[in-house]
Structure formats: structure tokens, C-alpha cells
Image 1 (spheres, rainbow, N blue to C red):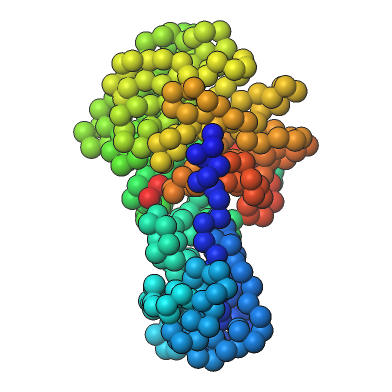
Image 2: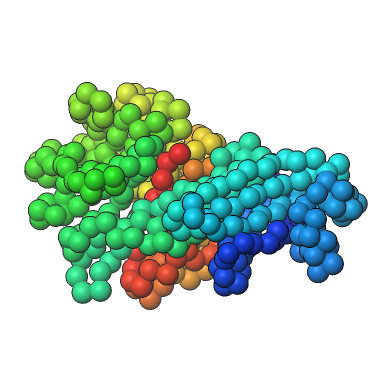
Amino acid sequence: MNVITNQTALFFKLSYVSLGERNLSPSEVRYANALIVKDLEETGYFELVPLSSGDQSSLGNMFLTGDSVRKLANSGLEGVAGAQLIKDDLGTHLVGIVRDPVNGTVLLSRKYTTTGNIRVIIHRFVDDIVFQFTGFKGVADARIAFIGKNRRRGYDLYVMDFDGEGIHRLTWDRVLAYTPAWSLSRHLIVYTSYLHSEPQILSYDLSTGRRAPLARFPGLNITPNFSRNSAMLAMALSKSQTSQNTEIYSYDMKVHRFERLTYSHSNNLSPSWSPDGSQIVFVSDRDGHPQIFVMDSDGSNEHRISFTGFYNVSPSWSPRGDAIAYVCMNERHRPKICLTTPTGDRSLQLTHGSGQDDSPDWSPDGRTILFTHQVKGHSYIEKMFLDGTHVHRLGAFPHSVITPVWAVR
């Protein structure tokens, strides 16, 4: 997995300079500047290099001109970013600029405006910096859906920002629910709910708050997952079989048609599409224990790709297509997050230590993995780079959480 390790290296040395403010309180300015730095660090693409107070003052007073930035030409920096914050009758504005210290040229210059929370324009600024340096879309503007346990009873659907802030509750059902999946439009979430006692797959429209059943056949309707373009949905259905064994089905979102893909008469579930939609990775216990399988999107060419251990579940295909994250069992019989190639020829355990890890899901740029970590019966959302480094907790939800998922972009 050397390629994966190389992908997670800190690529660019960057410094950030505050360029002043107009009509904002000192606490608002401190919050905004700290959030810009935090967002940049969270991307994993940058090493934030602090500047001396003299350089900070000089660059800020000169509003990051080409001449002022060129004084850092021999510092080893590959970029200097700055932001001015302004509040007026039209809203809150962020004037962002990034220069190359070698020659002083402008790499990015843009004004961002919001009438709402300043976090919105900060996330957009950081996403633009990421794209300027890497060619990848940033994820600071992306959101995360998850199922959260209620204080007294049951679970409900929540969303939050990419950094764990801005938690917002969507449902008030107080029933068992799990495995949300986010549509490309970012206005639609589907998930499994026991709202009417039996598991059904519901859609939730974030723009209207309306819900509708997508699959409510007798028996099990579970583990939905969108294709990358959101044209297709894969899921596991038992179709009221006496044994309750589930098979993988695809569902065409445009013509509303189901197609059965597996015929193994065992438990087949947790499908996840390859980025190009040509293949699906899923779990099956057809060989006696749950293992990871891959098949073409029409159900043909089924083949097993996990052969280490007796318990491998919850696969999630990377947006870059070169890796699949899944839950494996370590030597102490604790579930951990592992990584494998789509052919299964190489695998790597990413998480270690105490506790149980579950439900991996990829950031839209394929750089980080989201998962749940359970300790003493309480589960949290955690995040790490795809080589298993920089593990840290995300958000401050007061109760247990399950099955977090990034918005697709």
C-alpha cells in the first residue's frame, strides 16, 4: 500500500495571514481566522507554517502584495494565503488571496459573501485553495449525515458540517434507523428506518422535509447505497422469504425499476458502487462467514476478494476507485477498519488499539475515511487519513452515533 501512503503526505507548505477586518467584533475575527487555519489543516494537503510576528504584521499591512510576499522566497513556502473580513448592509464578506512567494504572482483572488453564518464562506475559500493547489475539489463545504441515538429512546437522522459543527436534527421518530446514503444533488438522503415496525428504505428531501418510501416489501429492506452519479440505488431485500435471506437489488431512480443482482440464497448485503458504476462490492456469507465480494453492476462475474479472517463486512469503495475500506476482525476479535484493493491482492489494517470500529465511509475527494469508534458502549464519529494517520474525533454529539456518511460531490 505504498501508493496510499504517498497520497496522504502533506503536499504543500503554506502560511496564513490575517489581512484585517471592518465592522466585526474581535471575537468574530479570532473565530474566523482560527477556522480558516483549522480547515486548511483538516484537508491534509497543507503543512501550516507559522510566520514571525514581524512578517505577519508586514504582510498584513501591505495586504499581501507581490513585493511583500517575495520577501519569503527563500522560506521554503509554496503559498501564502490571506483573508480580509468585512461586514456591511449586504452581509459578511471574505476577500481571499493566495500568492506564490517565489515570484509574488496571484494564485487565487476571490470575494465571498454570505448573509448567514460566516462558516459558509470560509469553507468555500478553503475549498478553492485546495483546488488551486491539487486540482481536487475540496470537502470543507461538504456535509455528513449520521444516525444519532436519542437520550431516552430510539434513533433519528442528523446532518452536520464536515468538521463536526452545525449539527442539525432532521427526524423525530425515535425508532431504530441506520445506513443513510446521500444523493449527488445533496438534497436527498435515503436510509433504513423501522418507522412502521418493519425495516423499510425511506427517502428524505432536505429541501422540503418530505419523506417517501422507496422500498417497503414484506421482510427486510436494508443497506441502501447510491451510485456515484446517483442514477442508481443498490440495496438488500429479502422479499418476504421465509429464511429472511437478503439479495442485492438495483433500483433505477428515473424509471423506478428494481432488478435482482444476486442469486446465492444466502445473506447478501451492504452494496457499494465503484466510482464509474461498473462494479459493486458487497458482503455475503455464502461461504459460511461474512466476506467481501465484487460483481459487475449487472450481477455477473461475482468473485470473493477477502480471504484473511472470518469476519469482513461494511465495504465502502473509494471515490478514486483504487481502494475499498471495510470492517475486519483483529486478533482480539474486535472489529477494526481495514483497506484492500479492488482485486483483493493487498490489504492493510488501519485502526488499532482498544474499542470497536465500524461503518467506514470516504470523503468525496477520497483522502479521508469516516467511521464510528465505540468505547464502553458509547460510539463516536472519528476521521482519519487513508493511511490510518491523523485519527481524531469529529463533532460533539452527546449520545452514540452509527453509520455516518459523507455527502457525494
